[in-house]
Length: 102
Image 1 (cartoon, rainbow, N blue to C red):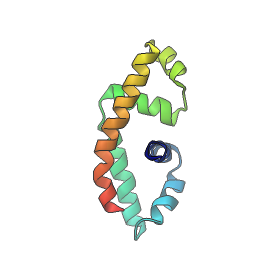
Image 2 (cartoon, rainbow, N blue to C red; image 1 turned 45 degrees about the horizontal axis):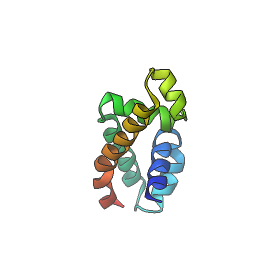
Image 3 (cartoon, one colour; image 1 turned 180 degrees about the vertical axis):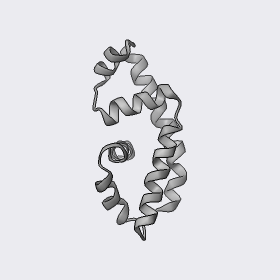
């Protein structure tokens, strides 16, 4: 369940800012708090190493499958899965401090 919520959050950060604001609005006290959370999420996502950020963006933003990412980047599928998993774990660590703001 946690992975599903984490994946949903990533897709919201990249594509659906208004929906993210509505979702966070239920958890925070005001619009500035929500905007601060969104900005912090962006900062942490873009602080990922290039190879991890690329995986997150291609999968969560562009909606590419593992196979499609492997083809686009000329990588073995196992490498794509491994890098995306590492990127998610790194991002989860980077986003963990934001939980205190909810």
